[in-house]
Length: 432
Image (cartoon, rainbow, N blue to C red; front, side, top):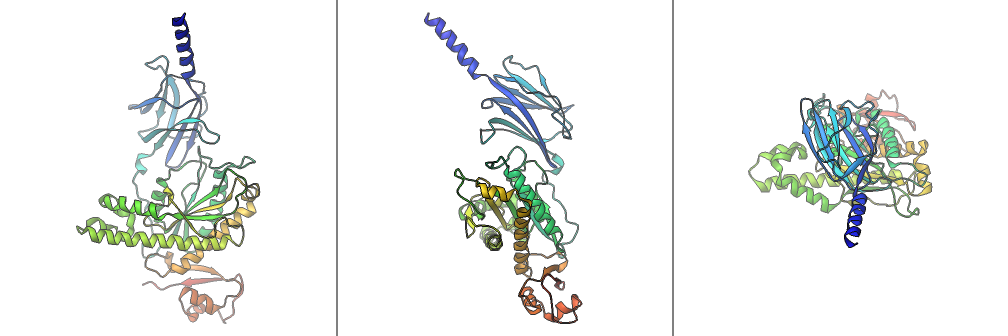
């Protein structure tokens, strides 16, 4: 009798241990494709690649498939077909991804979070783009200011979800697109969207893409959330001192490989045999980047204060991967709490999104006008545009940009010293 009970118990435990593939989702992006397998339980898997033709084979141990493989690929150019194949173990499921070419890949499990359960994620990256530097057609002595804009989350990562079901990833992309348009309409500035659609970009990839596009500033846009609906308002985050120092130590330890992270001083840091010199130069660059990040964050808070409530009145330091660049001033802007009903409604309002974008854009404009003549920054063809604000005179504008009143009159064809609110003035510096 005891033996029978033990046998029944083993069968019961075996049945409960069975995993299942409940769904498959595909998220194409410009540089990569993400495939997500939704699972009943934590993934127990092995995988290997085959060539001629290119295939990725994944064995899900002790699993069955409840997902349909029909019509899931859609417009993805990297995956030809997803199908089942006969596994070596009859209690397992073998999935084969037929690929267009050989890709750099990563395969990893994800634990349950929010609306998602257990998942196995496959990322396929174009090999011809890995490590490739995006060249800028203009020369370093005469180029546009480049602002990298990161719309938080995306694809399989929805970010925080509001009480009415709105996704953070949609809010951040909407604001990012509006900000990008404002910057691109400003002569001498160029916006680079790190994420242009509903797909995911890894945290480490974001600063790398910004660097490849020669970004002078990185702005990551998010919407905050909390377990309680009470907190509200915007805040701006910069890299914490501890994280900055940790990244600095890693960079110095690997300075032969990562010298490009420090801009113009990078080659000296890489080639010098004097470690003390390398540390000194790298530390100067790190501190300048941190100081610049804080300065820009303060500009953003001053502008956001005019249109929305602030959750934090000063820039706050946190350890965030997207802000780890030692060479690019970087901030993360929490535009409000999507977990707060009032904030959620505002964040989904197009008019409010435009106001947020305009506030951030104004901060960008003011930040670069403050720093435009400093050696650390380059100005696109040394010309930008200034919109006259209430209370400003020609002499005030001239003083702000460190140019003469006569010069302003000349390049703007002004016949008098009078200027009007809303009038656009060209600000130009002679090439050095």
